[in-house]
Image 1 (cartoon, rainbow, N blue to C red):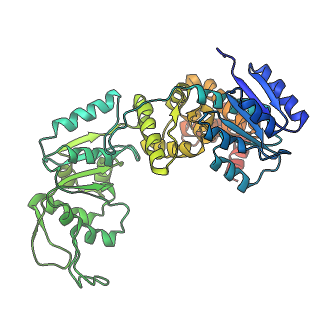
Image 2: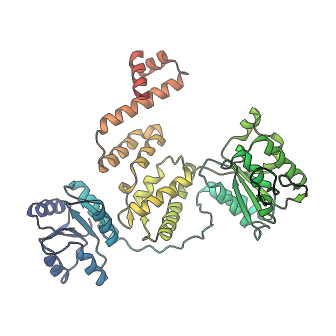
Image 3: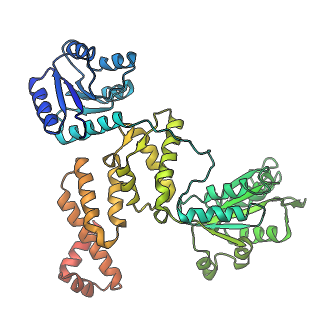
Length: 462
């Protein structure tokens, strides 16, 4: 600690004050303690600490009244509430009044020190001034995303069909919108439809519309997505899930440029640019006969492959910064900022849910992280567990260390049995995959008996 931070304690219990004074002093803080709210207010009239820890129920007043005093005086001092009478209503009320964090008694001293350190760092950090990107602006500093940007630029004067491929959650619709916004059809509508989310029997009507009486429940004429997107772009998401009969109709529209509504006789012109997307490997569907090869070639005039988040680590920080700011605006909360060590922790994750997973995590952190500064220990435990699965084999000890530290800070019990069981299960599964399911060979490679392997596998199944 370059400059000794000051921590003030307010509690009417002598033993609590003694324990906290000793722990905080050993951690390098300059500590002062008070037995009442009145004494705290008198001290505040003459001086300012870096953090205040206060019991809620004190003999002369509610400890949280100090928040009103600090607000009136416009003093930015984080307040950590402590109580031995915790319930849901009190916890919610404390956060609504503006406490930095809330510690029910009896508390763990390591937890207290961690919260105090976060509060002090949060107060001492300079306010960040950021220019927020536009709502629909693509974000990416990695080489992979720069190449995506270049491709979009090359296509900006074209209305050619594009097939976007990439894992679920990688941001395919964002790319499709960017292609539309930077095209000659930018002034027209952008209409998106997820073909996997609509029942097969309704998808034809959704795409092409229907006439009144065309089928049961068709009480009036309805325009389809092709009509809605006239003059603009129609984005067909998850095209790999489209049923074969509809693939045939879509192929005709792309080839002839016209179509009929369901139950209709009037030939309509398809004045749309088609952008399709899928997370599936369409060549395998073609080989299996579930996707038409001629439709694939019609859609795949230009293929734009979107890399997964784990292959564009340089984008994690700007994306997280944007999502945190976006979440704060949407929920009316204060903007929060990532510590450098937190950014590094995020870069070690596997991100199976890609950008969407990062967005959801940022929403969670915007609500749950106690201070303006987000520390690695603020990350949910499951995020740390995900890191173990994704680390390179040479760094598995470092991943295990990170997981163990996060689990201990979160209060998780029985770490050794949990880690041992998880390790055994992973080793057994990998060995069986390697040997093609041959248990005797897998057991030999692992150095265990076949009976042990069989018994353990049964345990994991229960």
